[in-house]
Image 1: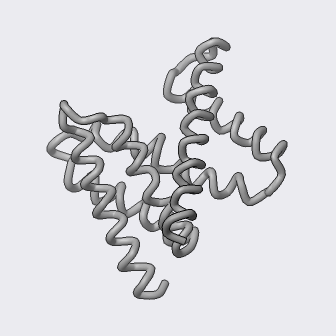
Image 2: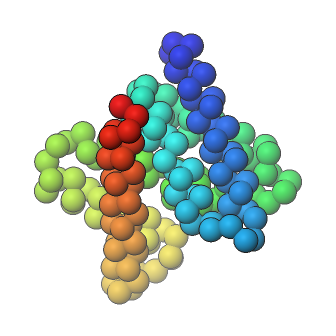
Length: 152
């Protein structure tokens, strides 16, 4: 990795930690800040490489566990398991460049996340989890389009 990638990744990790910390404050919109923190690995992927995006994600996890470990470990759980890896998984899935394959893989990923975190096999609850996943995926796509429009 080049120095530019390491410096950019470090800045994105710092922004991620700030967003996760502000998500812990009770008067702040928690979901928005977690979604924005999940966008940081995507920015690393767009600007640098997939390796940098994975480095940003893993470094954010390690640093977050050190910073927020005594404060509240629960601050990191949404980032570690839900919003953090979705951008990297989205990058892997959208490499196929085939809408049908992408949709099937996204449905499988959404079902896995819904089943693991909601701990149910009820069809209606899994369907709601898939709908929420696709709304989040659409929001990420809009953020990526805006990022390309203004910064690329």
